[in-house]
Figure 1 (cartoon, rainbow, N blue to C red):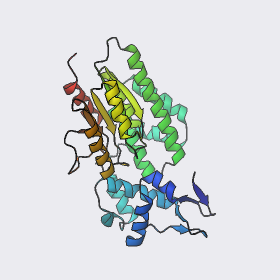
Figure 2: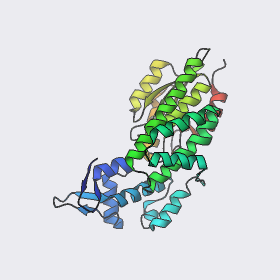
Figure 3: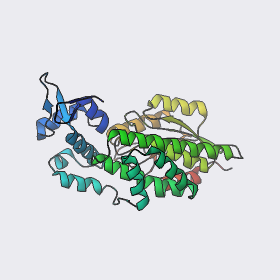
Length: 305
């Protein structure tokens, strides 16, 4: 971890803050100059460092910005008002007993227990019900806990690895059991600057339930590589995952660039909480906030069997 410990807690470099929150060093300097926050710790060398409390605060600021709030309206909010603003992002905080128990396993780093519980839940649910009704609430709760500083990086990363392994296994099992050829092929990826890839893994499972073969390129894939793959693999569609972390003007620009590089016959789909509809942007992008919406679109749009 790129940080220092001065005896009063861990201090994070500007680069680490940018990597963990999506707030660029330039934005941090502008906010400090214009609004007086956040105020960094200055090392004897003159380098800026930020506290853990500031990291947590900046995560919440990043979520509020992704929801469309302006810096001038949120940077002077109290900590409690900012938490309330972010908490309202979806009108729900699904903390069922099951979700709470899974969060407990994550906090205690009982990854084997989490893996076992995910297998059990998937075994007694329809795949879409499991993904949307049980796994999505967990991911939402993890995001809220992370933004509040209730989960640290090691806990979040360990849980993400377990969940991703489980989703890969679900997809692989369904592919093995498929008795007919793929109805179509789809390329799934995230754009540069978007490190979160669980969304495209979940979309890949949905694709398998519709006999669509998913080629997952992973996170932070260059636009040119995505379009090149779409040409080479004769794909029906390209799916892009966008979280609140990466939502904004840059992702809109990258989607526009990608749409321009794809053949008109290839559908471009954007999914996730950050897949908002911009005022100005490519009109021929199908956007979905949840997996049932994506599944319904596949049912409508797939070539006839």
